[in-house]
Length: 217
Ligand code: DX5
Ligand code: ZN
Image (tube, rainbow, N blue to C red; front, side, top):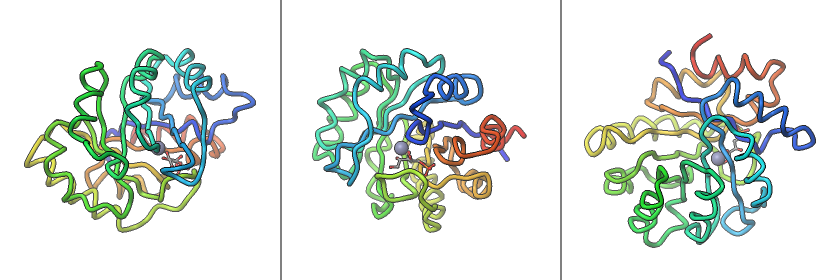
């Protein structure tokens, strides 16, 4: 398996011992993934600015924010100032996605476009030209610990072709239900980055789980 970039989702971290989990991720993973939910775009609320700030302060590896919220542009400057290096916004939440992606880049961050499982990758043919990454949701967003939706593997492969035609630099990130058992399938389909919440934080040995997902063990 190729070397994968692994981004643990702090949604599944132990908030009573957060610094322990931040240290674990700093020492073993590649990116810290923050899931921001507003109870409107998704049927759940996750965490707000104080926690984003705490995690950014403790991070020694890059931090990315996955905004599952309406009107995501309201938070770009705030997150940039807290130390977030990449932001992904949902295709389904943005009416002026070209402007939104350009704004993230203007602020000096990497810009990602996230899609829900039902959104066809062919709709991304144009936006991939200016995106740093596309995040394919492989569960319906809102909760950690769900099962990977099998048809998403075909979506990864389809997206890979679109990216090769339009902007080979653009990375593919897969988020939801990624485990040590399906990582090979996801990697082979063309993913570059995987998000993993429960597969890391619920593992007996989280550091080892990260290494398996990275493909270095
Ligand atoms: C779901 C989030 C995911 C999720 C991943 O809305 O975007 O990042 O927390 O968790 P697992 O790996 O447990 O599916
Ligand atoms: Zn996420």
